[in-house]
Structure formats: structure tokens, C-alpha cells
Amino acid sequence: MVTISDLLDLSHTIAAPLFEGKTYAWEVLDELKSYIYELGETLDPEQFDHPAEGVWVAKDAKVFPSAYLGAPCIIDHEAEVRHCAFIRGSAIVGKGAVVGNSVELKNVILFDKVQTPHYNYVGDSVLGFKAHMGAGSITSNVKSDKTLVVVKDPDGYIETGRKKLGAILGDNVEVGCNSVLNPGTVIGRRSNVYPTSSVRGVIPPDSIYKDKEHIVIKKK
Image (cartoon, rainbow, N blue to C red; front, side, top):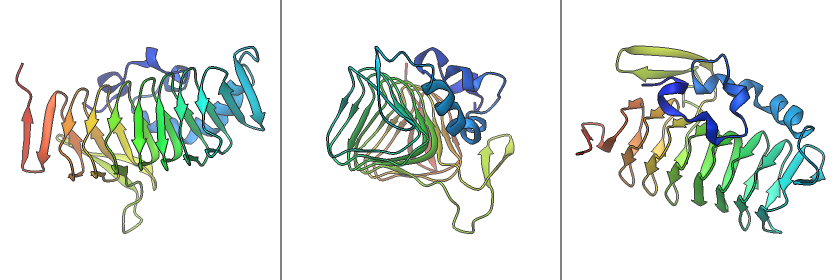
């Protein structure tokens, strides 16, 4: 339930080549910064503006004047980066994605049509196609004891080797308002998280997370 093929449709991201040869989505995070610089230099200047060193913005994207775009980052076609958004760097914002008011991004890939529209923090994470984070929901990317993050799969622990790892959201995941996704959270495709939840571990696809004792499979 935690591999790239389990979670993500790579046809919906400009970063697809970065995932090649890898098993888990978090394996791309160490290479993301250099990948953005390399990819940015290949982007068609007829389609992408290059307003600052390490920053590429599709001409049909909408970026509010008060938004901060830190290098390196790529804002893909028809994306929207709204008022006071803070992109700290090492971020890819997919086609048609929304980065909303006061949202902060750092070392992330947002696949196409992802929505982080209101007061979200997303760090060291990958959000799959059409994933949506409700208002105030965040990824927590560092453990309180500062030890390396492990992913708690039902079959055991997966060592990530990373001190910082937020969440991996599969395609079409819905995260309720004011939820916290603890370090190393993985949520399967099409699953929903109740508002104000504290989530950790691996959540199966097509499920509803009510709390850690109540995770139910959706009725077909």
C-alpha cells in the first residue's frame, strides 16, 4: 500500500522522471532541488516566464503579487498561487493546482489539480493527483525526539533514513480541516480523513479515517 505505483499516477506530474527507478515516493525528496534546476532550464520560454534565478512560472498560471516564490520552484500551467502564499523553495506546483492564502510549501511535489487552499503547511511531502487538504490541515515533518522517520506499515516498519518527512498522499485523497498528518503518514488513494484528526502510519486506500481505532472501508 505504500509504493509509488500503489499511490500515484505519474502521468499527472511534470516530475514523473524523478520517480523512475524508485520504490517509495519519499525517495525523490533528496533529489528534488537539483531536479527542479535541471528541468527548469529545459522549459520552453514561450510557455514559462523566468522571473528570478531558479524560478519558473507558466504564463497561464496566476500568481498573486503578494505571494513569495523561493528558488527553486516550478509553477506549472493554470496553477494558482494566492495571496501571501509562501513557497520556501524546492517545490513543484502541478497543473491546475491551488496554493492558497498563507499556505507554506517546502521541499514538496504537488501533482496536478492538488488543492492546498487555506492556511496549510506542507513540507517534505508528495501530494498525489487531485489530493485536497482542508483548511488548516498540515503535515508535521519532524519527530519531537528528532530521530529518523519510519513509516509504520501494517506489515512492519519501513526505514526512510530521513530526519524530515511529512506525508505521502495518494491520488484523490481528502484531508479534513485542521487535521495533523504526523511524520511518515501515508494515505492510500481515494481515502478521506475526518476533520481535526491526528493521523499517523499507513491508511488503506478507499477508506475513511475517523480516528486511529475507527478506520472503515468505503461502501461501494
